[in-house]
Length: 552
Image (cartoon, rainbow, N blue to C red):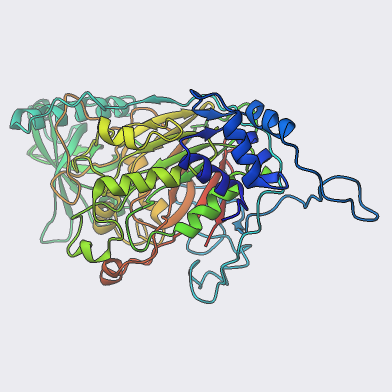
C-alpha cells in the first residue's frame, strides 16, 4: 500500500521497530516516492537506532535522490504544494464561557451547553453531532503540509498514588480515609465559619448562634416537608434543620452523602437541633484566576478510546492522528487521555458479543499500535478508567509494568486516576469520571445530566472532591490519605466516562468532558446512551480557549 499520509509512514516505521521525529516523517511523506524514501532512510539509520531522525532521512535522500516533478507553466519550480489541509474535520467554535459568568455558565452557545451554534453540522441545537443528517467528510491527504518539530516541556505530575497503595480493606482504614477527608476539606471551610465541634455545640445554651463543619451523614425530609441534614465531625453527630420556605432549601438538592459542608444557624431552645440560615461548600473561590502558558501551545484532551470494541472508530482515530501531523496542529504538543484506553473484558453483561478483540493483552497491543500513529514528539499523559485492567476502586493506580511495557510507544506518562498534571504551567486535574454517574443520578436534572456533563463536573468542583459519596456506584479504596480530595483549585478539569461532550467554566475553572472514540454499542442502546464519538477538544494553554474538532 502506498504511503499516502504521515500516519501511514508512522505505521510503516513502527512495523520495522522504529519511532521517528516528526519532521523526519514529513520529509518521507512529502517525497516523490515515499516507499522508496522510507526504505532508504531505514537503511541509512545505524543498526542500534530506535528513532529515525531528520539526519537519517536527509542522508538517505541525498544518497538516493528522487527527482522533482516538472514545473507547471506559470507556477514556481519544485513540487506543487497545497495550502494547509483541514484534515477533513468540522471545528466547533470557542466553547469557553465569559470568565465573569455565574456558576452554571455553559461553555458553548448551544442551548444544551455542549455545541456551538456556529457549527454548521448542528442545526439549532437539535441534531446530534453524529446523526445521519450530518455527513462525515473524508480527510484530504496530509502529506503536503510541512511542519517543524515540537519541543514540549515534560508535564509534571502530582497526586499520583501509583505505587503508594497501602489499603487492605480493614474497617479502620476506611475510618482513616474519611478522617483525612474531613480534616482537609474542613480546613478549606474554617476561614469562612467559626467552627465548633459537635460535642461542644451540645453543651451550649438554646438560642445561641453556631457554625458547624461536618460530613453529611444523613439527609431526610420531615412530615412537614422540611429537610433534616445530619452532620458528623470527629466528635460526634448533630442534626441541622433546613426549613422548606428558606432560599437555601434548594441547596439541599445538591447535597450528597459523605461530602463536607458547613452550616451557620441558631440552636433551638432545647439546644437539640440547629435551625440553618446558611450552607457553605468548600467550593472554588469566585476570585480564582487560572494560570496560563507563556507561549502559544495546545493540548488535545480525549478519553474513552475503547480499542477492542467492535464499535471502536478506527477510521476517525486515523483522521485525528493524520491531522496531528499537519501544520495546523503544529502547536498541539500534549495529548491527555482520561481513561478507558481499551474496551476491557467482562465489564458489563454479554460484553463478549461486542468485542472485536477478546484478549485484554491483545487489546492493549492494538491500542499501542494506534498510539504509534500519533506524532512521536508529543508528550502523552494517560490515566486508567473503569474498562482498563486495573482495580475498579478509586483511586486507581497506573498500569502495572507488563501493561506499561506494551504501551511504551512515545514513552507516555502513565499515572493514577485521578492525577494533577502541570502542562506548560497550566494545572489540569485528570479524572476518569465514574462518580459522574452518581452525581447525575442523585441531583436534579437542571444541575447534572448526561446531556450536559460539565454541569455535573461543576458539582465536584463545588464539593472539592471527585467522588464524594461512598457506597453507591463509585467504589472507593481506603488509603492512608484521601487522594480524591481537590486540595488545590485546578485551571482545567478533564473527565471522560459518560461518552458525552460538554464544556464550560465554573468560577474560571474550565471543565471539559471529552466524549469518546466508540460508536453506540448494543449495551449502550439498552441503557439509552447516545455517545458523542470522534471529537477532540483542543485547548489553547495560553488563553484557556477551546475548540473542538470532529473526525467522524
